[in-house]
Image (cartoon, rainbow, N blue to C red; front, side, top):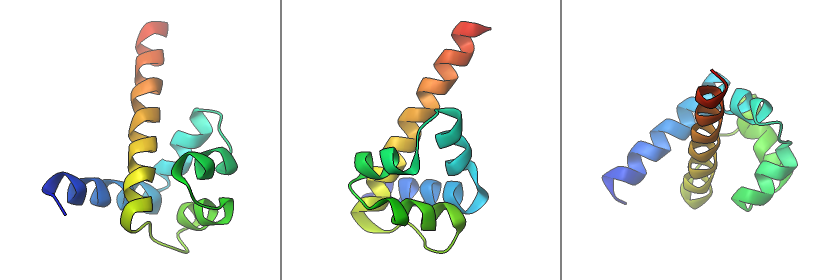
Length: 83
């Protein structure tokens, strides 16, 4: 595993534990099911990550991080354009 991947794992685990992942999803007006489909997991898995019942791990965690990072960039760009 590369350093970049370790940083992404740390990021996504912190985002899930702090509630930032849920906030990002809600701000983007997406459902847990839509996130799950993008990540390639079942909707209950995303719910468990968001509720703190499970920790994102492995390849799914890296895909989840990529989705969240993309959403955060999109939301930031939209906010900049609006302001």
